[in-house]
Each structure stands twice: as C-alpha cells, then as structure tokens.
Length: 172
Image (cartoon, rainbow, N blue to C red; front, top):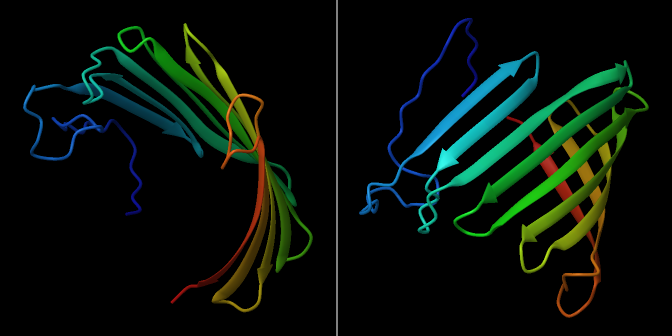
C-alpha cells in the first residue's frame, strides 16, 4: 500500500511480532514507533518478543540518498538487545548502486552482522554484487553473486559460502 500524508499517525496493535495472531495467552505487548522524512526511516520497538523475554529493544534505520545523479547510497542499520534474554544483535548494510545508463546498473551490498551475548559474540560478513539490466519497459533481469564469510559461524560446515542467483522481474 502506498500512501502519503502530513501529520501524525498512530497505529495500535495488541500482538507482539513474535506471536502468531490469536495465541497471545500471556497478554504480552510491544510499543512501536516509526518516523520518516524524505526517504529516511527510523523504527523503535520495545516490549515482549513473544518468546518469554519482556525487555526486548529493537532499533532500525533505513534510508539512502543520491550522492550524484548516477550513484545511490543506501543504509540499513539495526540493533537489538534484551537483558532478560542476555542477547542481542547489531548490523549494518550499505547499498551502493551505480547507474551506467537508463537500462543498466551495478550494485554492491556489503553487510556486517554481530550476534551478541555475555557468553560469546559471533560476527558475519556478506558481500553481494548485483547486475541489473532492463530489457524492456516491463522486464528486468537481475543477477547476483554473493559471498558470506565468518570465523565464528559455519555455513554447511564451512566458514565461507558463495552463491549466484538470477531473477526475471516482469511488471504488469
């Protein structure tokens, strides 16, 4: 849904995001807040996560801007912590995209993620290269090459994992 307004919006929902609708037997709740301005968004959620932890804090920033007409820089930063769970996470992803023409762009997305706890922190990194080619007004092809790496986490028994995807997107 796309909408635009000026002013203040309040949305009251009684179900924490970790609980399936209709199964909130503990009457656990979360308080959420989102603000946005010119494509920059900040989100805050605090409360029960639906898994028995009562003090979970989630912070998230998503935004970006055109550095120059043909180069876009996007940012997504996230943070979560719970003293009750003795755990959390923090991470950042950058979205770098260079347009070479109206039909071709190249993107790079470096991501860095840490899962935190008092017993052990784990770090992961991922790098994704995206090639976007618009074949017609309605058809776009996206090829992605991704490499995940970590000294702390294994991917199918290995510390590195690479993959490729190909997507065809058709707009009606």
